[in-house]
Image: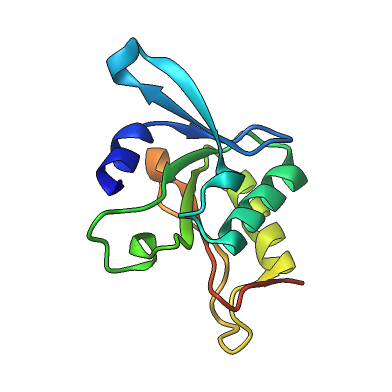
Length: 139
């Protein structure tokens, strides 16, 4: 299943009103397939809730650049999945979304220095890392 997920999720986009995954099926002429991310149980419920909340609050169409990473020893390698990377084309927009998420969600009350959103990278690698924990709560 892990290999299938990695092969399928070439391009992932969230649409306002219905957070969905769009993946290019390269073996069928590049046709699009949509997947409702809210139904993907390999992603933690809290991670799905935060992603859908951010999509609703901003109205943006996000491109997800990373979900599960095979053999990753960090948060991108956990199941259920607790991390997602969203492409950011503007540092200013990324900073605003980062602040909005961190002002509204607490990663872990026992570790207040850790945040749910972290903007990092530069140029074409600029992205917003979204992470959750079993203790993550909406404020």
